[in-house]
Each structure stands twice: as structure tokens, then as C-alpha cells.
Image 1 (cartoon, helix red, strand yellow):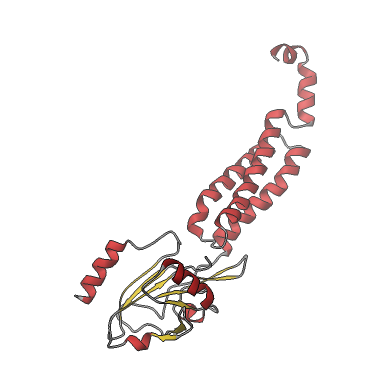
Image 2 (tube, chains in turn cyan, brown; image 1 turned 30 degrees about the vertical axis):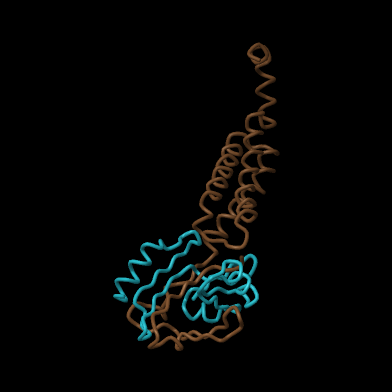
Length: 91
Length: 151
């Protein structure tokens, strides 16, 4: 599931335009993003921005892996993500 | 050029002491331009997301601008170099300060750590349906991908 501080209408646009198989969740007031400690308040245009982060949670509800970055260009390598998923979930 | 300076040496020296010579004039203007350009270009190009990491090349441009301004004003302090130095320092330092000092990144994520349960999450999806992390317990793993948004 992807989470960003956008409104539901924006989430729908991104979801439909890219034909994504997963849900895009909207957190426009960034409350959950803040709860997760991932909130960056951009001071000049007063935007709430979620730090790029990936959190892998197993079916028992425990975080088994996470990666947080402070640069938007820093995208996790899909191969690394695949390896992590396979190793931590053993599937 | 060399003929002029050898015959009118006294006059030339007096003139350059009163006003910045051509080279330093250029330096002063160039310094101001780069100082301003760094900050302005950053906001124009980067748009919504101001993150420290992608500010570095713009900060370098601004830094060069500030350096040129400083050289100009130290070598030829005069009306022009001072006049260009003020906005140059204001814009250049203002930009650098705002991006590298004032902007605070969120601190370490206390609620989020490997080995413990994440904070509860219930948010509407793109269809407006309420989705909870709790819904997935026992059903399978979940990968949360937080991204900037504002596209």
C-alpha cells in the first residue's frame, strides 16, 4: 500500500493513471505520517510531505524491515526489496 | 592599452581608486547574479519538494556567487561593489540558511522500529474505502510505501 499526504481524489488519479495493483492511501492532514515520524513540513509553501520510506510488516503485525530516506531521489532498489521480502518472509 | 597606462599612470590610479575597475565590476555583478540564481533556480526547478540533498548543486552556484562578491568588495570597495554585495549576501546567505539550517528534517522515528508493531494506520484508499493495517493481520504481509505525493 502506498501512503502520501494527498487527497483521495489525487490518489485516485495516480492509481488510475498508472494502473496500480495496490491501494493508494490518502493522509491529507498527515496525521498518520506524523505518527510514523515521517513528516517533513516544507516551510515555504506549507506542504506536508512524507519522507520516502518502506516498511515491511509480517502477518503477525510486526515490522520486519524498514528503510527511511531523506531524499526524494533515493528510491529503494527493487532487487534489494525483493531479496528482503524473500529473506524476511521466507516465502 | 599599455600606452595609456604608462603615460597617464597617475590619473589611472586615481580613477581606479575612486571607482571599481572593469574587472571587479564584472565580478561584482556576476557574484550577485550567481548568488541570486542559485536560490531562484532551486525554487523554480525543484518546485514542491525542498529536500536538502538536491539543494547541493544550487548551493554550490550560490557559494561561487558569494565568493565572487566577496572578492569584488575586498579588492575594490566602492559604491558598485557594495551595492551589489548587499543583495548578493542577502539572497545567497538567505538561500543557504533556509535550506541547510532552518529546514528541520523529522527526527528519528520512535514509533517505527524493526521488531515492534508499527503505529496503527487507518486511511481512505483511492476509492474512499477505509483501509486499516489491522485488516491484514493474520492475512499476509504488508509493504507500506511512503512517498512524497503532491504530483
